Amino acid sequence: MRTDFRTVKEDLRKRMLDGVWPPGTLLPNELDLAAEFGCARATVNRAMRELAEEGLVERKRKAGTRVRQAPLRRVQFEVPIVAKEVEAGGSAYRYAMVRRIKRRAPDWLRARLQLAEGTQVLHLVAMHYADATPYQLEDRWINLSALPQAAEVDFDQMPPHDWLVSAVPFSEAEIGFSATSADEDTAEYLGCAKGTALFLAERTTWWEAQALTYVRLTYRHGYRMSTRY
Amino acid sequence: MRTDFRTVKEDLRKRMLDGVWPPGTLLPNELDLAAEFGCARATVNRAMRELAEEGLVERKRKAGTRVRQAPLRRVQFEVPIVAKEVEAGGSAYRYAMVRRIKRRAPDWLRARLQLAEGTQVLHLVAMHYADATPYQLEDRWINLSALPQAAEVDFDQMPPHDWLVSAVPFSEAEIGFSATSADEDTAEYLGCAKGTALFLAERTTWWEAQALTYVRLTYRHGYRMSTRY
DNA sequence: TAGTGGTCTAGACCACCAC
DNA sequence: TGGTGGTCTAGACCACTAT
Image (cartoon, rainbow over all chains, first blue to last red; front, side, top):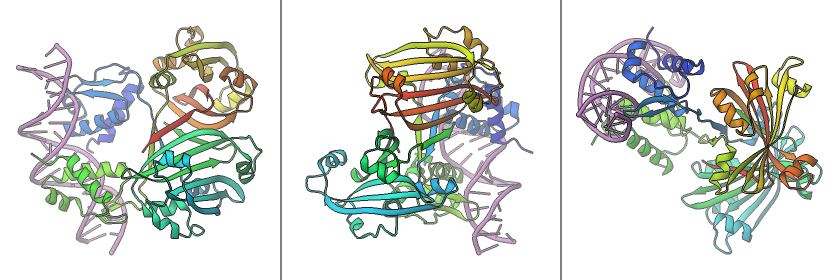
């Protein structure tokens, strides 16, 4: 059995976790490690490169590889897709359009998306359910000057997110998370008391410097977004 | 000038973004691409592997490489470190311990951290400020059976987080984000009205299957955690 | 300037799996 | 069962930077 880069990687990681190589330690160079593990230098290189990407070690030419003082912590989330989220929780996903209005972009939206005055937008409100209980309220604005086809789409049949992914597979986005108080409408949609603290995700999507859509996703009371790292 | 794997990668990416290879397209195999780019197969492999890690393409032996239908979206956050966050915002960071009590772990904490009955814990409450205004309320519990040294640390001089990073450089953690209503105490600490919706981050940290600490970080009203992708 | 990591090459063998 | 990606090797040259 040959020496696998994963074997090397996990072995090196173990030495750091077990305190054999505490933070700040200078590791042996690639050639020496390759000799120790009985593998090619390229194999050690791959192992070390991945450890560096994970933030466990820091590499510099000539200076060598060091265990990081404060191992970097990067959290990775999958962008929550509501249908998958609901089904992963063992519930049946259901979706319903609430409102669909074509109108001129309000000022706050024009400012946020940098739209010209008088730009037409499509305002969609939709509810997402887990079994029969409200899960998420979607409040979406689509820039019709960038996506005129959206005006013809039947969003009763296809959730806006699905259509957007198919229409614009690649895009830049900014996503933000915060807490908000339920206003009267939101409280009614989500079945909670007015003033309840709710988790809010906002996303703005761009393509080639043009804003495509802005969406506010308000989650039901008690929602928690979590991950391990 | 030789063909760089970055060149190959960006060239391939461009073809997908530009619609030359729309979602679902089967890409040429590595050998053909290597011939096209005039480089070794390993170079193409590295480029494609990274594109796969980014979620742009999907690779399967024998089946080949395909452009993803719905390009996967992975969001990366740096784990927010309050001091850096505040200073990045151009404010002066200040920190103050509010309370420090050694006690037996309450039942809810024992359940969460899987502690034996009667386990001693250190309960710390601290405030983090941006300039003179409250920024974050830290409510932390440290398992003294795992970290007995914590009992002797002067947390007036060093924020708990900094001490923990130096004491336990490597650990597993679970982090969760949600929304919460300000109770009376929290409202007073953060200078907001009772019942205000606040952003809450909770983190539980483990090392070798033993819980080290559980912390609730409640942010001031209006806080927003955001990222691009 | 010398030591270290970064990358490319050409070839090889293998595991997986769609056909 | 054959084609594809996954990985390893041995060698080479180069870029960066600590000294």
